[in-house]
Length: 166
Image (cartoon, rainbow, N blue to C red; front, side):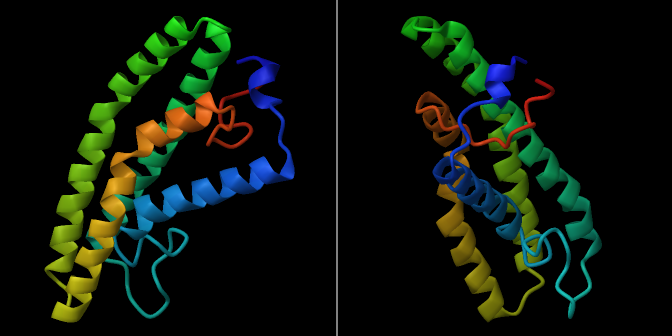
């Protein structure tokens, strides 16, 4: 990876936006899975994390890594294509197509995990969890287009250093 990938302008506005987007994605991916996964990867102090929640944590973390990798690949494709919009679009389409099944599988796995988790909750909590998932699933399904849009605007969603050494 070139120094240019890592040395992109990191003005405070862009850094704050990226931090906010990263936090939002992490919140959507982890918090929507259940209370135990949304607390900075730690269970709430008053509740023991279930074995199922503990087993799902690495799945959620791996998805976050995959999305950062996809963002790096998209940024590299944009830089490599230069001013050739057709080459850029073809490269970004290919990357999006490669990652789409991973996102779809993760969303399905998260949905199944959540439904199993919801089945153990009191009715009021279960209803709140279902409403939370209904609000957040569209955002999760939009991870690839949101990342692509961000990269095309020159505002990558990954953190400096996520794309490897300069």
